[in-house]
Length: 181
Image 1: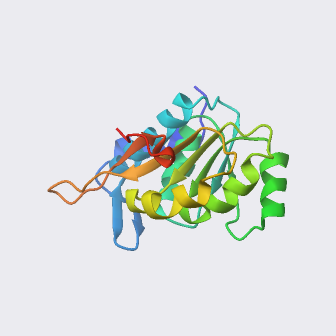
Image 2 (image 1 turned 90 degrees about the vertical axis):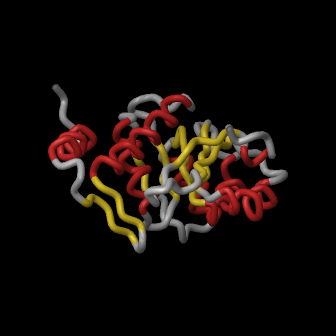
């Protein structure tokens, strides 16, 4: 068996599923919850066509979603590449191209910058925007209109359950106004 950080995390999650794994502001997740969310990211990356060994940019601030995305990349056996959210368009174009990103997960706040340069990056085939449904409706669609951006998809939060837990669902073509189900 080949061990990597994803299998190590899965072993810890199986051993202590109810223990806290992540605390970020008001958001808390147990190892089991974080493992489930990272699995969802991994499945979506693979479904989008990201192959093991391909590079995926993580263009997000420090957040719970950043951790979920990083672990999801590792579970998909993709290579996560941290992208500093303070980079200029020129720097983004360079890192997206030089790192040969096949995929990119970008926070909604930085989606306009990603959209401006994504079309200039030949290896970049898949872009996911991490955003709330409200962010997608009010900010992203307007900012991304008119930019050539490959295969845009988005994470959107599901309404909180009675227990107060939030989960994420994968919504395709949100930015084009098509149904998110």
